[in-house]
Image (cartoon, rainbow, N blue to C red; front, side, top):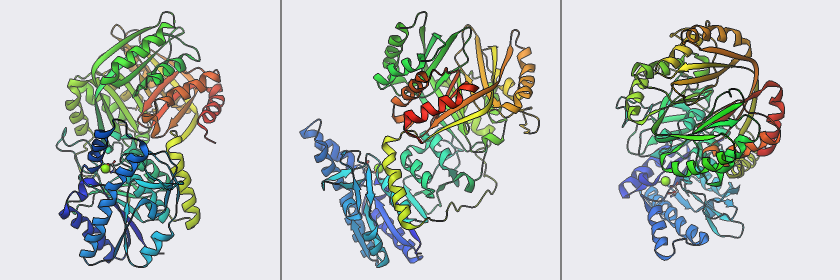
Length: 598
Ligand code: ASP
Ligand code: MG
């Protein structure tokens, strides 16, 4: 089997002739090193934006077919120039459009889905010793029209070709040296990561956003294509994105910040199935992009839910919320503005009970109050005042020593043995087709959890830290003495009082209740309430963020099945709900059916 490598060059990496030569030299070097090389190239510089603008001169809403015809020329220009540059460098090359590569798509112009990839022609060229220069972002529909795959689509072309060809790796050349522990503009000691897991990368969406298309990362993850993100301007090795097993499992890998958050809270809600679905319907009607969603345990039949939305969507979210509460007696809406979300992500989090506690302690240490908390298995997010955000990021970065070199972890080889070639092409293409319709990649149920709620707790810095340090068995997160906290939910406070709920494995319920009891006792009325058996249902996938209808679909399915929701928490990649233990199976069936997942 020949060794194949896919090298993708983004717009800035082919911006001018010297950069094109540099990119060509990389491909030639890889070929000299014994690899078969497929380059995937984007349009030069801001070419695509320019073409979109130009089209707008004639028609503010240009016909989609013509727009695709136009946009595809950007990539066609790049591949031809690249092939010439490669010949100039003394190697053989052939440029191919999407159609010539053999990428067939459906006919949804502007965001076409790949239907089939024929690799014969590609392979012939490779076997004949040519470097194949493939146009990213485009394909051909059944009727023979040129289509494009959506902005940033060259990443998807690269990941898909790497998957169908069984490439050893897919290199993404861009204008940054790799993925950093945090945005270096906020914390100058941010360190470039040698490697990161697919899920970590996806949860750090705001760090990854400028680097690589989320959907392509999800896709690469699904097929185990090792991806290397690196600079086209230097020879630094970049960052490997690979399977969790082949990258070190750190408690915290990186931090992300969303600076423009606003909060909308709906309080005084009746605690029964269907209410959440109604609220999500109002939000979806107005296409409000919800970020954090938090619902804590109801009190005396009254529930409360909080969302965060981008500040610019606050007016719309507020209007939607008002419509929803109008239909519910006694419900009311409150808002909070000038907020920011700070998140810590690490695949090793589940094995280190103290991570959340340490983050809370650090925020308390700078006297920063936490408004909302949500978590996923590998992420903790806190909503805080925006004017404390930079300081908070720096403090947390330092607390987890993210500026320091990681100790040597697992190897850098994320490769998996390949399935037979044809099977591979088929499954890869099926995966691609699913990418746009299936916004949810997975629905899972954990029936082995217990829920603990502590209330009321004072609303001041340090409370979360005290509670979760105690539950973790002390500030030094010794896994042998503490309980393993899974989901954490803190909703907004009222009159200086907040409530905090969390889940632990059912077998650790008593231990956790005991450990939580100590700090709770110091908070006057503070009381710990335990439900020794609950079920946690999670839906995950990158589509959650881009499709406002996912929440609606989820809660409508639960309402239909008459399942009441006790807690809600979200992350970039995941929505989790806690329901009564005996309703778990019914809930998961209804939700799987709603999302068409077997
Ligand atoms: N040129 C296209 C765009 O700018 C595709 C890409 O760069 O991936 O969106
Ligand atoms: Mg681009």
